[in-house]
Structure formats: C-alpha cells, structure tokens
Length: 169
Image 1 (tube, rainbow, N blue to C red):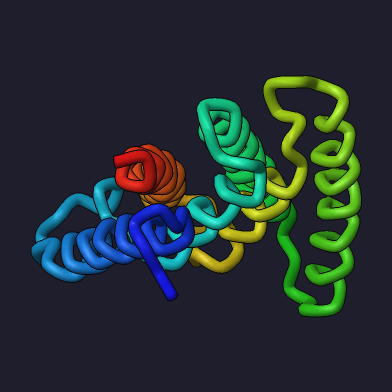
Image 2: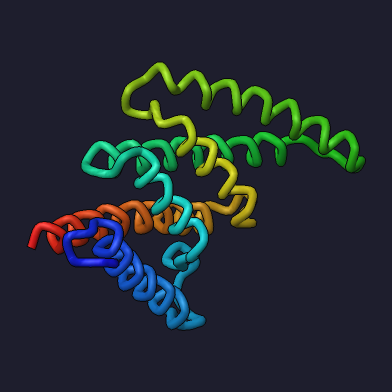
C-alpha cells in the first residue's frame, strides 16, 4: 500500500510533523508576546499550499514569499487609503472600498508581467489574508501576518526537502 518510496507518504509525514510544530508554537506563545511576533496558523497554511501549488522548490519558495509580500502590501495600502476618507455611511464606505479593490486587483494582476512577483495567486491570497487577519491599518499585526506567511512558505520548503530526502533514502 504505502512504502517509503512513495513521495506522498513521505510528504504526509514531514508536512504533518511540521504542521504540528507550527500549531504547537502558535498555541504556546505567551500573552505578552509582541503583536508583530504573533503567529497565525491559517495564513501559514495558505502560504504552505501556495508553495506546493507553484510546484515547490526554490522557485516556489521565492515566488510564494514575494507574491504574499506584494499582496499584503496591496491589502494594507487599500485599507490605509480607505481610512483616509471620512465615511459615515456604510454604503458609501463599501463603494469606496470596492473602487479601491478594483484598482488593487488590476495592479496585482498586472504584476504577472514581472518575474519576481509573477505568482498572481500568491498576491491575491496575501491581499485576502490582510482582510481576514483583521489588523486593519496597524503596522504590527501586518508585520505579524507577513512573518506568518513567510514561515508557512519556509515550512513548506522544509517539508518538501525533508520528504524528498526521505523518499530517496
């Protein structure tokens, strides 16, 4: 059924172990941990998945991290721009944010033309993570999100290297 020559078996072990370590570390960080050092499990898993969707390897690591970074910047700047407006009406605020996102989505899609940030799904996931993370326009939670997604991509790369080595052994 499964043998150590089965790459999926080996990746299952390495991904499972490293994912468990991530969840444990994120869960034991003390309450006094600085905001920018907080680790979120779900954004790390998103970056982890993006790494493998890109095909893994050094290119997958670099493109995932660069794309997530650019997407987080786009999401953060979108919220920062929205905060520049004094909007007391929910409908107007939604319309203004929608217009900002139209522009941000266009720019993120156009990044596909530039090799370093050409992994457009990583940009969109990074941007979406900003909205899901709930940090708003505060810089420390945004840094925490960025570090979390980098950790996810790095753990993905490590699990890939370890699983590949295990499969060859």
